[in-house]
Image (cartoon, rainbow over all chains, first blue to last red; front, side, top):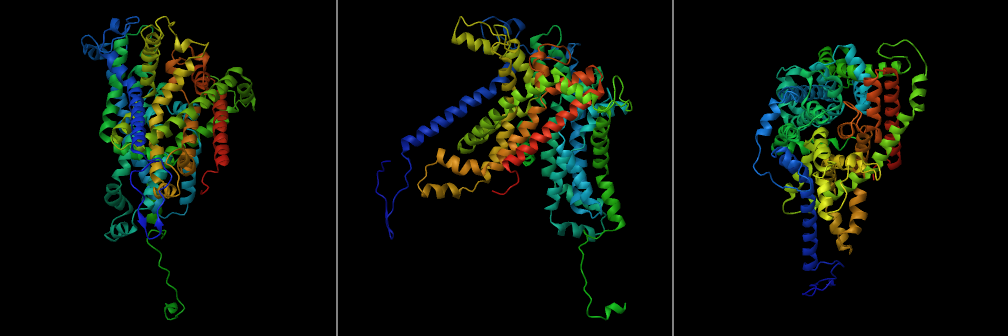
Length: 300
Length: 319
């Protein structure tokens, strides 16, 4: 549009400015519009978190006051959080223990198995290596949750119903993570391994002393993702772990949600407790999680 | 060693990692053993068993042998409830897939072009990914879309118009507000995930293209979005569409926790997705034959749509 100064002269003659609306006023307007939209969306995205915290700190009459919304509780009812643990119809402590066990086992073993297989597929010579790799890739074609009926059949034959291993073991074998680890190890400089081999290390020694310590970044990214998925999983745990001592925190909360009588304050305090560990993980380790999600982007 | 005297000898130096030997074979097998055995027991055998049991009469038993041919498949495909569940999930996918695509791309562009507060906004939109479907369902069902005159959505109605009727939301069939509840909860939970994938795609675009376009007289905006950004996000877009579609077709958690279907019937008959129906047939009625047949039909549909989508968009083709 209008420019205060004339275009500079150059050896090619007068330069034409590109036709672009670059007036400062319009620029500011775009920026203001963009930030207004961002802030509005951010408030909308934070609303559910606010509702969890608000309801978990209110009394039941405060939550259910007809047409009289209160933004903040009169006085925060921290006792609600204590009540969740004391309410025998919720069994929150067991839920947290089961979920923590499952999520940690998943984090460690899923990552370990995938990296071991990925290393072998990338670096150890074996006649049938491509066949093995193809078989692993083949399982990526199969949509995960749909196979819960046949998997249930096999796990129940193996005696895994209402056991912790029945919940956790079928999810430990991640073909996609194997694929990502293979890619990672293929790009790993061979000189380092070669040096390790010449020092008299076995394949296991090379993996343990050289490759594992050098792949902590990808391990953290994939490990944290598997931790989040297994903490939040619902379909498989609700099928396999319905007995009182194998219920995950999600199953516990879900069954309280559909109970005959619900205390809303406890429901929301329970939701806050169930969400808290992952929110902490997210805030502390977001860098790795973002990296892991980016890697998932190449699936499809 | 007579060959050594010949000058025709070619010593091919095989790098150590290509040389096959017993140690390597043994190491390979040990390293892949957990993964291969695990996939064998919990993926290949179940699918094999599932296929066999889907041809068997298997009520209250998981054993194979009472062959009934295609009877289970005929029963499932002819079952109005199963067909209705396929329609339900199709409607769901038609809403959730484009909406997720649009909003995650919009958020990615907004966040990516924000200078100040970029990391903050990215975190805000990404953090719902940490929340489980169960907990989000609690908030949606009992907090935001509570049918009482104290739920947040009803309060917004009330602020806009004091005489607005109290809406039941999840039980409401005319208009079917339950779709709003089901679609918005998934949107909130997953949009940040796909936003991250789009941001990664955006950052791979060569910035000099925009500079070149500006020199050519193009303004940054709609034109450059449609001529540069969108075409170069092609592979990212296809990945987002496919991941999202596959996830949507396997929806279970939010339907069960918002409408019901596992612990009690609730309102699940309004919108029962296939996985909930399969759960009720296989786990509820313990009809593993029909349950497996239904699971395989659904698997076939998902694979077919994924392949068609891939073919349609020419996935993997270098653009």
